[in-house]
Amino acid sequence: MRESSSMADNFSWLHRGIAEVFPQPTDAESDTESLEKRLATTDRPLRVKYGIDPTGADIHLGHSIPMRKLRAFQDAGHTAVLIIGDFTARIGDPTGKSEVRRQLTEADVKQNAQTYLDQLRPILDFDTPGRLEVRFNSEWLSRLDLGKITELLATMTVSQMLAKEGFADRYKKENPIFLHEFLYPLMQGYDSVAIEADVELGGTDQKFNIAVGRDLQRHFGQKPQFGVLLPILIGTDGVQKMSKSLGNYVSLSEHPGQKYQKLQGVPDTMLPQYFELLTDLPIDKLPNNPRDRQLLLAWEIVKQYHGEQAANEAKEAAKSGGKEGAVPEFSLATVSQFPVKLAYLLNATGLCKSTGEGKRKIQEGGVRLDGEKISDADTTYQQPDELQGRVLQVGKNKFVRLVP
Image 1: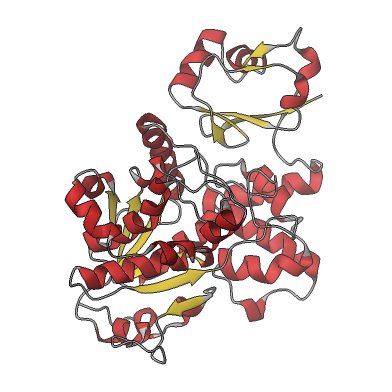
Image 2 (image 1 turned 30 degrees about the vertical axis):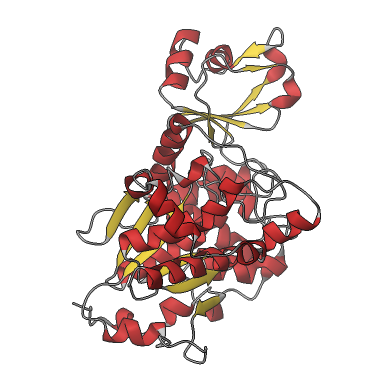
């Protein structure tokens, strides 16, 4: 049954930080009740879908935005269906890509999926019965036979696929588009059929894929889902979208002091977006002084992921301990020679008692560099500049910053 709490009846939680909800009642469709009406009149928890392809080992604050909205739906009494795209990750979403993506192995995907779930625990409600389903889409996609795949392909034309922005650009530039990439939107859409989604969340770049899900639900006799599109977060440089490759990101797994330092430097112009998308603080009650807003943002986000004590410690460390905060430093100049194996470095920094322990920690998945898990015990670095300024981590509580 629908919850009668004020949160469930007041849709401010739904509208905060969203770019678009579709369809709207003004759209020329036969099923255009509003999402607010569906929420207000449903006699059961809605099934709210969000899919993640574990194509890497790390989640940054940009990825947290749809997860926070998923949590808002949970808190309003609905069921979050988190789909781990262990099957689709082996293809890779072509959205926004100028070339074909590398296909991952099953082992890559499995390892990445576990690290994703670990990082999402501070955001989603994993404990309340009925509030979360975690599903792997290989459960249904791996069982599709050629007949079913042909049926899916027959729901769309080549011209419809080429209307998708990324495909259109690549076609114009004569960059290769492989046939298996056409399957990706259809498989993401079929996920909605398989779990009978009422709502799907996604970034603004996912509208095409979410709309395909609506079309497939109609095809299979289901009521089409609503799409809730969320903004793409601009990175800490205030210019380009948050991305690990651009170095303008804040990882969920980073040391609290490192998080704090990055966030207290977010440009003034970006603070409204960061507060709206990454916190629940009332926007109209923020401090007037831009510097105070920066410090509040840094403290609030560190508190979300590490607790109030860690946030206070990061704040004090930033005040008194220089710009890198509470992360101890290790000078690479003390390493006798390069190339150097990571396992040796773990011993030299004191993070592990021996090189052998370092190898075991790497193999167990307990070692990260700048938040990214490293699992190859033979990892070797050729030059110090590959490591300078980066944070080496063992477990949850052992960190060291590598400096010249």
